[in-house]
Image (cartoon, rainbow over all chains, first blue to last red; front, top):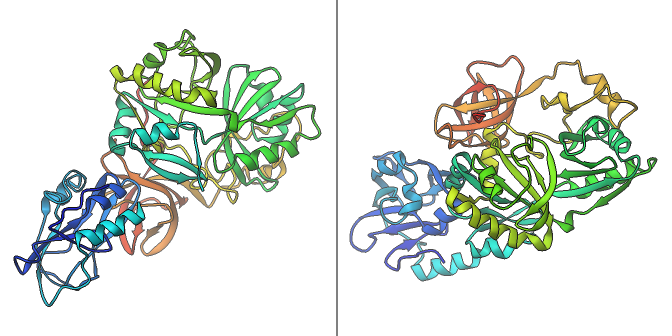
Length: 129
Length: 361
């Protein structure tokens, strides 16, 4: 069973969202479950800092040896920062998906909806694995 | 429901990520597929290839039957040697690529791909009907374990008295490995030196453990199908279903050298292949190296100035080159300025000769 930290929120597309309750700016990455399913990540494409995204938009991609998947914006707002370190060293996604492997930060506009709790995400991924 | 190999429990205990491949439940990777790839290039990797098919052709006319059934000249093969060859249909389309081992004057083992071996066994049976030869699909009786990498010979030598030093590439001999009867073949699909060990199903687990223990001091680790695919891609080796299919002749794939027109007698596909052997194909199989970091994948169009000039058959990030690589069928004459359409974006690639990687011998 992959690590699913209780304090984070999740999407059905296997992103995690941190800081939802503390701040208008949240941090987004992909879950350990997603990283494990992808295998060794070799390429990460992120949205541009300063761009505006809508919840559900495809804003980037994560490519591994065997496959590629899109990164979806978990919520709408302005992308205020992207993690250049993970672009330069995509293995951070595998090694530390909830830490150094974070991907971008969004200043949230409007009310986030449709995010999953850790409990709900656990149920989702246990059905898939 | 995917079929397990005799090593399924071993893979699970090693924490392998299992995947369906051609109807078999196979290890995709055990840990990092990049580490597995690098281990095979630098030390050794241990592969379960028990999904491959082993079809025996035996009898006084076994050699003649194979000369008729396949494009190669198998009656000219010396006992103890192996050949890369193909089975084609009447139109010359490739039904499978094969390795044929001559085990005796009247005994051959045809190794076919997992996705095809039942069809190959049926085809061989039909094609051998007029000959005094018996075709017997023994795939379920055999497990296949491969040790691949520059340290493979040293590792195997600790478990066998067989004369490995004199065993040439594409040769095979029967011998005892860890006290178990095996066909020891110096073949592989990684671009490295290595061995493939055909053993009885019940010997697979103990042999795997023996090889794991013997290989540990040499840096051997178990390696899954993901690394096998990137290793063969770097080595420029075709994969049936990607670079080869029934719509292509061996000549289309740049592998016309496997077709032996000068062998005696007719063979299935001869007329069709003779008609095309001197016709320059519209496209040829080539290597592509991406300039960027996005990876060309199977099915992506190869483009040039907005026009489609080819199609990617296999692609992956190359550990050895540090760049994405691909094999593709590309229009002959399309040289410079190629791009691959990766999800709508035209990514620049350079055309190169295959293989991408060649080991130092």
